[in-house]
Structures are given as C-alpha cells and as structure tokens.
Image (cartoon, rainbow, N blue to C red):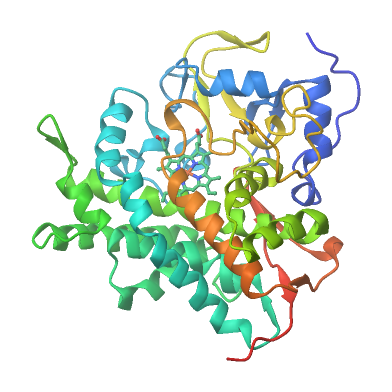
Length: 416
Ligand code: HEM
C-alpha cells in the first residue's frame, strides 16, 4: 500500500518522549496508517495524517469496546483502561463507552457541567493561580511542574466537584502517586485510583442527603426525560472528570510554559499583550500551544467493529486503532509551517481536544485554567527563565499523555 521499505525511526524508545515529532513526520510521509507494536506488546494501527485522524475520530465503526467484535480481543482490559480499573461499573465512564449509553451519560453530565458553571468559576481559578505563585515567588526559583502546573488542576477540580478543602491534600497526594511525582511511592497508581474512587463514592452518598451548588450535587440532580445518573454512574463520572482533567491540564500548563520559554519572540508578544491588559491574543495562544505540543499525544483506544479502511489502508474487524493527535496537528497538509509556534495562527482547527462524540467535555475548563495559569505567570514573574539545559529535561511519556517531569525556572524574587 504505502512505502514501508524506508527505515522507520524508533518509536517509543527512551528518547522518544523528549521529541516524538521527527518519527511522526516520517510516519505521516511514509506509512500514515501503520500497524505497530506498542511497548506493552499489543499491536495497533497508528493514524498520523490530519484528514485520516479527523475521519477516524468521527467514525462510528470505531468503537470504544474492545470486545464488541467478540473473540479476537486478546488485549485485556488492564492494558487498555485506566490502571486499577477492574470491576465493570468503573468502566462505565464516557471515554470507554459507545452510543446509546454514551449519548445518555454525556447528555446528563452536560446538564451539570455547563459552560456557565465553568465561567462562574473563573475568579476561583485566578485566586488559586495567585496563591500558588505566592508560595514560591519570594524564592526566585521553582519547579513549575511540582509547584504550579500539578497542584492547580487538582485543587480546581476538587473545588468544582465540592470536595471539602480539608480533604483536598489527600487528592493531591493520590494524584501525585498517579503521575509519579517526586516523593510519591512508586507502583501506587492502582492504590491511588482505588482511594479516589472510594472517597468519591462516599462523598456522593453523603451529598445525596445534603445537596449544594457544587458539581457533584449537580450530577446527582441532573435529569433528562426523567432519567438520572445512578450512584455508581455519578461516582464514575466524578472520577473521569478528575482523571481526564488532571494530567492533561498539568501538561498544558507545563508544555505550554516550556514552549513559550523556548520561543522568546512569541513569549514577548504574549507577555506584552497580557501586561497591557489586552487578553485578546491569549485565547488563540493557548490553542496554538495545544496544537504545537498538546498534552494528549494519542487519543484513547478505538477498535474496528467491522472491516474498514482508514486512509486507504484496510483494517480488520477487532483491530485496535490509535489516532495520533500530536502527529495530525503537525500535518503540513493542514497547517502552514506546522513545526513553527505561531501564537497568532488563524483558523486553528487542531485536534488537541479530539473530535466527534468524545470531543473533550472539559475543554471550557481546560481553556480557563490554561489561559489563567499562563497569563498570571507571565504577568507576575515577567523575567521568568528556564533554569536547566533543555537537553537534560525529562519527559513523562505514557502512551496517551506527554509532559515534562520537572520544569526548573528562575526569576527575580518578588518581595511582598
Ligand atoms: C475527552 C483532551 C482537559 C474531561 C478528551 C479527549 C481529548 C481531551 C483529546 C478525547 C479523547 C478521545 O477521543 O479518545 C484534553 C486536553 C485537556 C483536557 C488537551 C487540557 C488541556 C479536560 C478537563 C476535563 C476533561 C479539565 C474535565 C474536568 C474530559 C472528558 C472526556 C474528555 C470527561 C471524555 C468525553 C467523552 O468521551 O464524551 N479530552 N482534555 N478534559 N475530556 Fe478532556
């Protein structure tokens, strides 16, 4: 079909996470739909061109259910799901299900998790960003992942959900275990997921008797034609909001800040606009940072329910398909000069939030957090600079997400 004789640069080796883009460019050019062995040993089709990626994400024949096609599924749940997920009711969250269940659950959650609720949350996100910066501003140096990008989304989601403030540090430490923050015990992912799930189930149970204005109460109240979420569904929903909205946002703030620090002219443009109180550039800038080095490298798993073709490549029923968002978003057939960071880029239809029925439910919150976090950082620490050799920075590359482990910076200390 395509020229598969040219040698492919190594995928998923130790250095891959620090710069996967040359390998993705090779795939786009030579083998845009390529069957590849993943580090777990599972084989999957990687889709790397923008047009194919967008089409695949909207194709109803690509299901979230690995067993839809029956017996072929040798890929066990443990390999494709969230670590620690085992029992059936934990699997019933949006990213793992197809219509009609997906349609029903998404409609219900959308009644509670509204753009209006997110907009009303803006002052709190601003307060959190400022408080975190206050905690290190006097020192003149910080690790922006550990001290800023990581705690911000955790506290934000906890507040939004209605987790009492005295319990939020537990979430911070469970979340740290999930992404192996320094100081967190290794191998604790399954345990952390279990603790969070247990906590949320109990919180939902308690809130049912005493509803408030928070999102969990909203999930309990939500109804559509007389239908409600069951307690299990509400717990799975609260968990997926946390899970889907946490590491993604850490990486948006981390990758975004790093990209700005590496592109001084672009950073200056944004910083001057923000300092002048002109935030028009900001929204477009965050979209471009998502396109240029987005947090979600590969969309979550999909499986062919019947034989089909993607980009002309036949795919057998049951085969897993992975859409490489990071490759599609650098496709020169879609984006002019795709490897250039251009904060003023127009008509930026990137796939960083996915596409189709699973399009990111949290995009309004992610945008709010990304825009607030970056603008506040540039405004308050105007001479922020990288305090490490870029070659030495370590990247965390799971299969799905990609982000920095640490981001050491320095700046003139701010004395109160
Ligand atoms: C789905 C990206 C933040 C909640 C998705 C998908 C992507 C994505 C690519 C689709 C995955 C697929 O089709 O396989 C991002 C990025 C974020 C972000 C880049 C941050 C910059 C958030 C936040 C929340 C959230 C803050 C919630 C608090 C969700 C949910 C889904 C989802 C619930 C599943 C939707 C469905 O299946 O219907 N996200 N996300 N995300 N995201 Fe986000």
